[in-house]
Image 1 (cartoon, protein in one colour):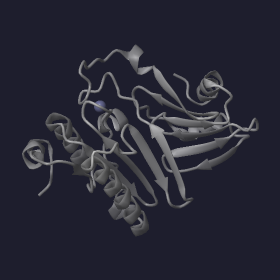
Image 2 (spheres, protein in one colour):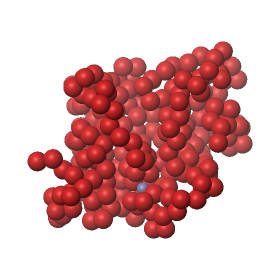
Image 3 (cartoon, helix red, strand yellow):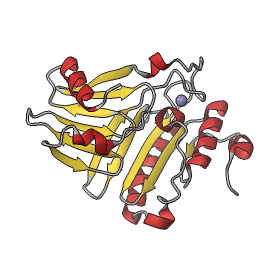
Image 4 (cartoon, protein in one colour):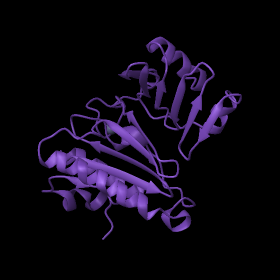
Length: 234
Ligand SMILES: [Zn+2]
C-alpha cells in the first residue's frame, strides 16, 4: 500500500517512532505532516547513487522535513531505478537510522535532532549541518507567515573553534554551478548537492544547495558570515 496524505494519519496513528525507508518525496511529505499532527518523532533518510541525507525531526522541538526541502518534487530522471543506489550506502544509512531510533526509544537525545547529516560514500565524506526551523513553515510553525523579510534571516552557530554552521531560515535552491564560478580560482570538490571550496586564506566552506554551510578556519562569526555572503547573496 502506498502511503499518501489521505491515509498517512490512519496508518501512523499509535506508532511510537517513524523510520523512513521511502522512495518518493510525495510519500515523505505525507509522513512529515502526519508526524507533526500526531506528535511522533520522524527519522528521515533519502539516498541515491552514493549520496544520502539523514535527519531526525521531533515535533515541537525541531524543524521538520518541510523546513529542510520545502515543496521539492521528485525528479523523474533521478530515481533509484534510473541511476541506482549503492547497497553499501543503504546499509550505512539504515544503521544510522536505527541508531537514532534506539536513542528515541531509550530516552536519549538523537544526534541528528535538528541536524542534517549528508553522507557521500564516493569520497567518504560526512558533513552535519544545523537545520533552522522556518517561521513560515506550514507544517511545524505555530504562526505560519509568508513574510519575505524573515526568510532572509540566517542562523549561525559555532561548532568548535574557528568552525561555524550557517543556515537560512528557509531553504534556498542554490545553483551551485553559478556559485562556484564566483570562486573559480580556488580549489573545489563538487558533489551532487553540495560543494567544498577551499580558499587561499585557509578557510574552507562546505555549502549545500539548500543554503546551509559549514565554514572552517574563520576567526569569528563576522568573518564566517562575510565568507558566506561572497558565495550566497540574499
Ligand atoms: Zn517545518
